[in-house]
Length: 464
Image (spheres, rainbow, N blue to C red):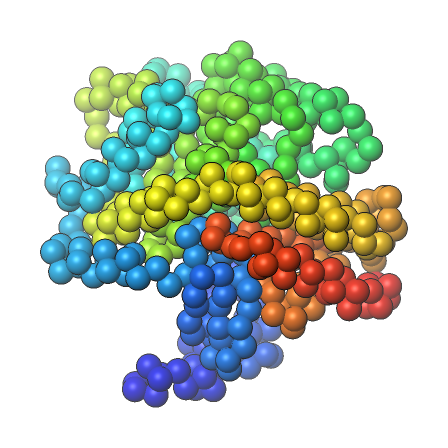
């Protein structure tokens, strides 16, 4: 046991293959490679593996480590809370101080962004659970309103809302749906607002109208009286950093209000500063009825998520007198909530969200425009705040892909990692989402490494 605590990396890799099943992985490839890369420590924007290789973390873990790694005060808050009260549930008409305080803190932040309607918070442990809560809450709400036929959700192709049965069904990723017989009934998917992929060369305003109209067309085809909610990420993260064109979200909101449909903003990635605002809906200027949150809520230091619910929905639940028979063992976990509160303190004290909006976000956009957009293999380099994507194409000025599509991203990603940058490949794009504490020098390193990796990958791409 002591050798493992001293990071005996060969032993850990053997145990990884023998016993550990990593998330969303090919277990055949895990075995072929002799185990996963073992990350042992991190500081700021850099992670280090057990063999001593350091990588600039261009993904903030998994879109989440907003305040960066190695924050002593978050560890100390967790330690103090564990000593005082490590755990108690919220099932038996009980609560603990941290989640109550965190709910009030989030209600205040949402009030500034939203106008005061999102005043009620349900806690979970992951973004998937948050959207699972959305699913049950929305259907329960309409049932209590005497409109139980309103049970259908509309989502988008290529959306990502989680990995539980309900949240993966809400998502629109076909490769996830083929496993487990998904999606479950009552979920419809429409086109995504992906200008480079589905509106190439189209007027942005016209494309925004067409993408929004696809939602209304589906509502009318099914029957407005059967539609419960529309759910969408302000920016589709895992779908490839799909930034919708101007006006799209206003049109979507108008459609939802026209037919009395609930509007759900999945802020699991966009929330807590990623776009340069506290929330993505705030940046795009629309008003949701429900908001799911996770990731940046604790900067990934401990697992916690939240579902914010409008006053009207909660008033309906209260008026019914019925229990909302939904929840998890770790809903409102006191240690996780305490760390989340301290994480929000850091975001506010260091003005990381304002810095993203005024400084590092524009710096990243300018660097990508100058050093990545002109590259002969780049069809588009886009960003918003500190989230971005580089589209890899076979012919400059087009959106034509290498080898029929879907293979270029992993090739370029592997070259990035070999050069000391952790980024993610999504089909034919490289996506990035660095910690909000990233410096100009580190942004330069990120952009220059991607440019060099594109050069490295040119020959392999030409053979696809």
